[in-house]
Length: 95
Image 1 (tube, rainbow, N blue to C red):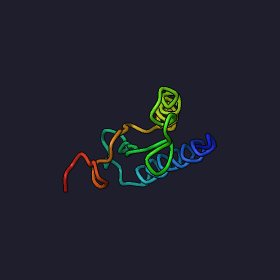
Image 2: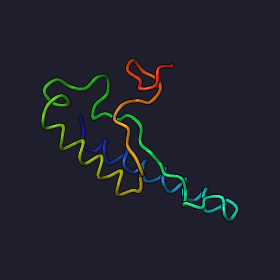
Image 3: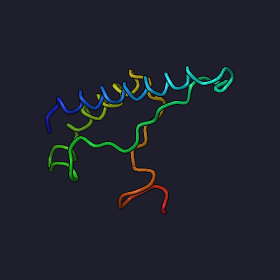
Image 4: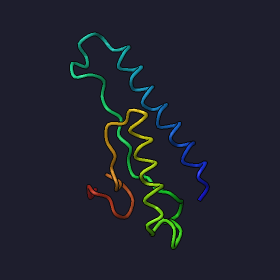
């Protein structure tokens, strides 16, 4: 529940975008006619192990969520998935 945790993963998010952009820049000319591929953030949560009652399941969590979305956008992420795409107990694509 430490707010500094968000700062750490937003730094990692910016590093991921920088890595993809560097890879795209090193690719042969014409490989990415529409620009480098976008980086998307998969499922994320404000606290580990199903959250914290009256915090991650309450209105106050909206501020954490908005900070995360803004941080991902600021670092150059192109999309955000609220749920996990594959894996977990509530995946969107049933494997």
